[in-house]
Amino acid sequence: MGWMEDETGLDRTNANYVPLTPLSHLRRAAKVFPAREAVVYGPIRRTYDAYHKRVSQLASALHQRGIQPGDVVATLLPNIPAQVEAHFGVPACGAVLNTINTRLDVGTVAYIFEHGAAKIVLVDSQFLKLAQDAKAECEGEGPVIIEVGDKYGGHPASGHYPEYEDVLNGGDPNFNWIMPEDEWESLALNYTSGTTGRPKGVVYHHRGAYLMTMGTVISWQMTLYPRFLAIVPLFHCNGWNHSWMMPVLGGAVHCCRDISAEAIYDAVADDSVTHFGGAPIVLNLLVNASDDTRKSFSHRVEVFTAGAPPAPATLAAMEGLGFNVTQVYGLTETYGHVTECLWNPDWDGYTDDKKSALKARQGVAFPMMEDVTVVDDENAQIDMDGITQGEIVMRGNAVMKGYYKNPEATKEAFDGGHFHSGDIAVQHPDGHIQIADRAKDIIISGGENVSSVEVEGVLMAHPDVLLCAVVAKPDDKWGEVPCAFVELKPGRTPDADDLIRFARDRLAGFKTPKQVVFQDLPKTSTGKIQKFELRETAKAL
Image 1 (cartoon, helix red, strand yellow):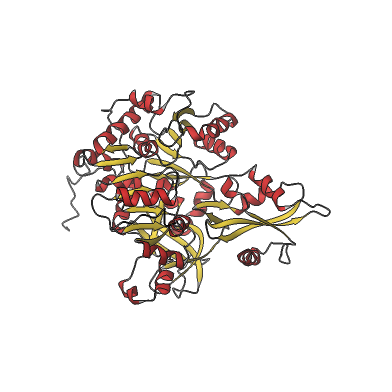
Image 2: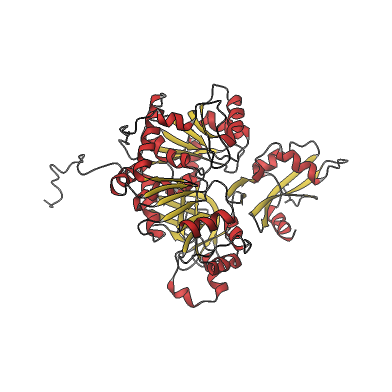
């Protein structure tokens, strides 16, 4: 008999097995780092002890209002302390956190309210009308509104709804957190635009978020007491899980409500911020800032960037300013970033242009991922020659549980034992992945995903439009913007501004086409619009 064949007494107990959850990070930090700064926002400087107590009060207050384990609590908040607190307070009462994109239109928010069945929504005063209008469109009562006033951000509470601080004050700072009994329990519900008109609900589990926080620490080569500037909206993949991660290291989350070059330079120079993440548009803000806006600092700042790859010139300029930029890649379905451009010291001697080009790769798998690679139509590994194209697929604990109430889409996404990203890429001999195109025509504008199909559907509803196709147009500020190519009905003569206004009335601002071109659309013999031709035209505009 082998020595491991008799496992009598080798059972899971409370002593040797605890379900993995990011909630554990803050509980530990309150004991290990009680006096260290945890959350910073304007004049607000909260320690881990105070942070933990406020999270406990929030969990208690939600519980008092009837929230049960498994219920959904939504937020419509920018990156302010209440949004950070919700990331722990909502799951600490056993509920599922649904952070909603504040830039969405009323109809989409109403759909999310109903599809996710949120019982309560925490709403920043700036977005109160959006929440009210969306609630009014719900077939049922919709979620109960709790208003979050932000006097430091210029948006004080209206007084028409229960106010967040009052609600918090009614909670018990010694509330006994409801920890998951199973790490597969749902932690968060995030909605992604996808390529159809209605967003899909992506469900995260506690295990995946926990392992994301541990893997990111390794990949970002972080040490104790980092100061993290929250630029990536916390409604995007829960801010790439960084709020859940910071207590691991006793670090501080610096909330950034309104993103500007001035705000970033102030945080870096005056508050010694060491890390932040952001889309290429954020890098452009810093590079193009005026001399009056820039501030000098002596430490190196580590930056994760994702979305459309930044231009090599932008990366080179960032290096000169004291920022070390690492390209990462991921999706809502993968909790955020799951690959990184892992720098090879052998590249140090290359020219700046060559190094910047290498830095624009999407890279290799983070440590918490089991496998990230590129496959062909038969789910077989492509040749890693930097030329052959295939689809990026991934497998590991940082992959969603699935699409909420959509088993068909979940089955399709997990075909062959990997999650299929829908992104087309090449793979280099060293394993590094580099995106070549977006298979599902997603446009990434300022870090936001825009579905070309959704925009086309809106424009096709205009009475003068016969056919239209929407593609990405390169943009120095936003990375990419939607560009619409329109074929008009005979005798119709609207101008471009007419169609842009029509779309803006029905879509979120970032989804609205920034340019409209009237022309006959190129088509195949079967009538399919040849978008690759339009992409080339858009590049030349």
